[in-house]
Image 1 (cartoon, rainbow, N blue to C red):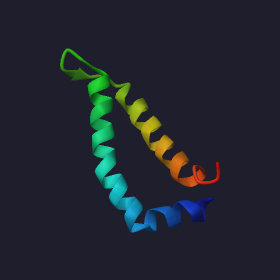
Image 2: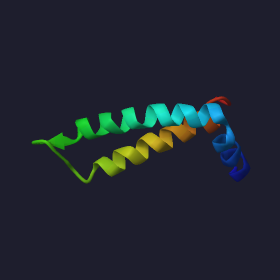
Image 3: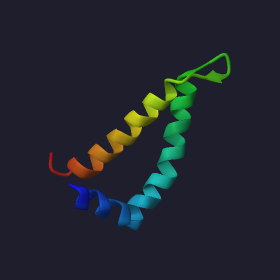
Length: 64
């Protein structure tokens, strides 16, 4: 499992995908959880969900 994750981050295509998609997805999370122009602490939980979903898709998504 650890070797699979290490291999994933050595992949240049994956790294480029992450660099382009994560800022957009994190911005959407902030918009979703902002109230009166302020972002709540729960945005961190949503960011974690985004990261976990990305890893699940990349690591196990091909096997499903």
